[in-house]
Length: 225
Image (cartoon, rainbow, N blue to C red; front, side):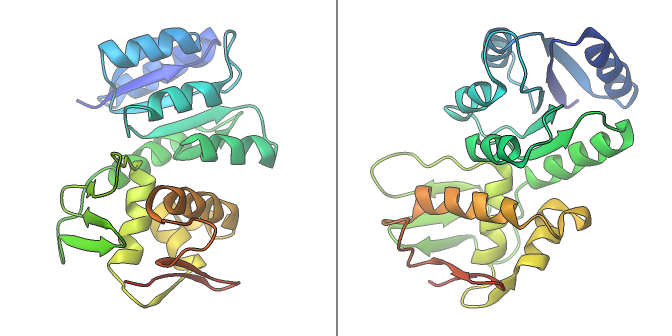
């Protein structure tokens, strides 16, 4: 079964999530602070993390960065902070989705299913695509080449895959938002900007002057082989 790590210092939310997730055949681990979350993740690696930002010992963004240092596990932020600055900071740290409290359980479960699907590799079509000095193995979700290992999150993989499977073609913002995040995200262009910036930092020789992951202002993005 899928193991979900719930990180929140509110006992009522933790209890509600544990009951609802277990009722739907998920295994659940819990942690009430960031330090416990990181230790639990190391000793019992989860398949998915649901994370509050307002933790008693550290900000949730620090937990995200700590996890992203060694794992690409999907991370859903569940937070009372509705400001766009907090959302951007969490996404930039490596979160895959952001749900604002108060939340509906059905919506959260739909988000869980979506990020879980994004974590599954798609093996059809060309298996390996060259992106500059990197060889991107889409079937096995591995990037080789360069001086250091490149780790991509499930959402980064799905976004990159959409572009690499359409070389030279303009992929619209609307299509990417719908296919990667879902129809309710069709106006969240800030998601695209943050994730494209992260992909360029990881894969472009000069992220400020990308040669392969290109922006078509106001329209979308294009992969130039």
